[in-house]
Image (cartoon, rainbow, N blue to C red; front, side):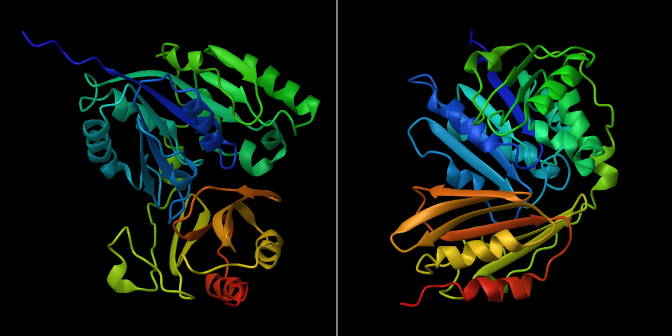
Length: 343
């Protein structure tokens, strides 16, 4: 008699835009047990996909990215076949799902526990990262999806404690401790470090969304795409020409996104480009992998804070902007092209 395959331990790592989810997953991957195979499904609201490129490439790790919307709604129909294909290809010992920062976890939880995966996946602790500084932002604390990311979490990690003020960290701890049903674990952390043992906490089935329709009535279910090369629009591996980037736009949940893919040979004057990217108003998030001479850097801006660091990625330059207002993407693209270094 054939033995039933063991269900795959599965975790959702959630949190609002810019809270450090990808950094947290990278930290978990660095502690992946030897000999285990892990699969990661990354969902980006933006159009061109950068988070996958920030994850390590190594044996026993399979990363799949779904960009251009939220897997809880706009990309919802693709979630089941994408997950099935990833599981079949990777046959992982663990599955981690990273929804977009504006994604509502309830629909994902329902899918993972539904008939398509009930015998294949063992949904364990849902982990939510919280930047305590966001408790000062009216647009965040009034966001119903933000509240339900916390409502549906078994574990909440208060992240970025190295840069947050002590009173905000204490406010976050007090607020989380007063939630009902109580959280299984609340802890402070920096750089998204999560104790791997927390992943195997058994999910609390009593957790409920307070605003289950939040994302649906807040999201237009419209993601508009524009490609400078229409013939390549259906190709996920479309390649830009030198000095002529591919541009893709989208919108939803009151936010606007635009992403660019530049040819690998396009090389930027980083300081000129940094000036443009840091002076933009109404920004929620900017991410980029950018070629500067023989080196490449990862640029990361959350609200008005930004940093950059060297990165091993070498395929092409990519920049993704998420803003609360629609920007003049055409003019911005022209400005960025003026930062190309002269050969």
